[in-house]
Length: 380
Image (cartoon, rainbow, N blue to C red; front, side, top):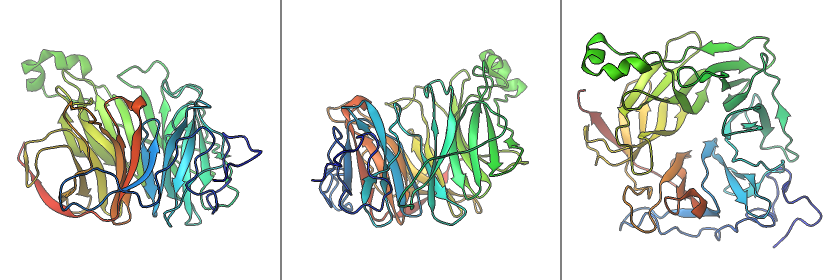
């Protein structure tokens, strides 16, 4: 295997148009699975075969657009993450940019040229969202280089999403606490001003507060925006806010318009691996995709387990993927949660942990096609 002699191992193969280096791990990295290798998950008879794209030392999120996908690979030798890409031809390679001490929270989308680009934040402290700036990368360029986005207004900017000339992102509000931790904006490249999106906040009726007085303490709280996607000027995002029991909901919104609620759940005791919530919202055409990480008994035509679902933003139809992505809700040996799943062509690409502990590694998996079935939500 080629070893990229004479290069800084945290800056591997500039651009994805690298033939000999595709699917080769950098020094100290985790070796990829053999091309076409099949994962043992899911194991149900008759299910489509799953392709294992890569094994990882640590869990990661994932993003996709236009047949491309991107995720983070942890290099245990250098204690840093490389940005990995799968292109539309199915080739894998690390991108030639500096590694990061934290996983890349990367989002893919179209550049003004129509080619595929990536945006992500580089932070002084990614956990606290301190000192974060936004970077953009043209993935289809043979000499891909980071471009810092000159967003006006300053502040610590993170969780970006890209659509041609526009990026959507969050800006941390210092000392905002749970009531107002972030602001959301869209910015068009070259513009002097940002377009603010008014985030929803907890709102309870007098009867609800009378029944559960503790709700009054969280009235008006915005909570945390845990995931964000952009298509055109329409943003989709997951919100998790404190209440008597935390609330997680899924929204879509455009600048100058009120947020539209798509789905919501009280987290209650949570799923086996944490808060009941919506992972990796992604808009493709008229469909909003998300992984519903909780049990829900009020669905007709669904098995009530966590599921990959999609919502038609024009007709309000809902569908569930007819596939087991391997996510486990038990506590048996070898069980591991799903971190993210996103569309890839007619199929899906997702990351699945090897166990309940993220440090025990994960897999990047792919299905070439996915079938969908209609579901109906019971009246609430």
